[in-house]
Image (tube, rainbow, N blue to C red):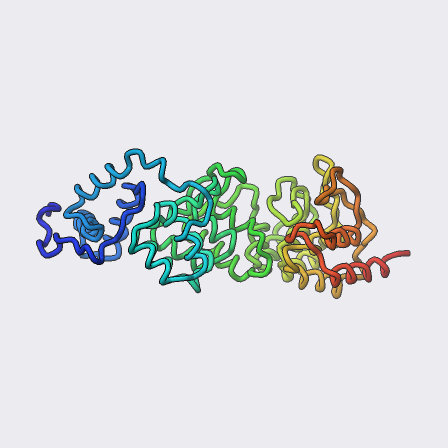
Length: 391
């Protein structure tokens, strides 16, 4: 059946309820919307879905919609918002203001980038913004759209902020998570890489769900992330124990290419990694299997040499406090706080040697970045270990 053969009752656009095309609309995104519609309504062929979508956008048929898109695209580069900035639509999405979002969409005062950035803000807090996300998709937000400023596609946001429901929503609406690394301002990146490298340390259950969703949809696991590392990221202590049972040397190895970390993990051990990502059960498995609580990371380009306890200090707004308490209460007598590591501390021009206590104290400084601040409780706890371990 051709587009023109569609039911005549569906050929008349409802101008009061029609969707609004953004400034500089994307023909490719409209094709994706039509394919999604055909999947949602199996009784529709792709051609029928294209026709229905065209009518929803106020056009008589698909060819007319494509002509409108081509016409609007001429010279639209001057008006397209390519900044990573909160224009009214993403700002209202970020405030979870459904009615304000609805009003902007009805007025048509938005660009494709506004739609996509608003969708990014909606899916990073999906539980509170699910209706907003649905509404944005209905009005043409692209699940594969770009966040802006060379950050990469918006699917990266759900990984970085560990929102598995938002991630699943994007995938359900056609987002691709299986692509090879792409260039971004942070270097080559993938959806799995953003999830594994998330700075969040107190949502490990969400992290595991994100990883499992990505694995289910054939996301690329970074080559340097060996199975034991993936088990730690997932908080799967049983899998980690099985892997160590097959290769006991894993607990003794340093991994020069180990990625991520609040403190860079390059050259560190699996124990450093488990501490950094606040996976308490994995820490216990590693130590029970022979990992050294005072193992030192390799020094690479003059930086490193830290022991695992450093990774439980000044981590993202006290997120590692439960880990630090666990290390001290269970292994405190074995922790050597005299070991010094070489860091280039925030605000210091030269790298310097610091002990765990000195590192914690530096995190109390007024100029320490928020995500590297320590607390008086952390400092006092490390001080108690240092006193106990001093000769």
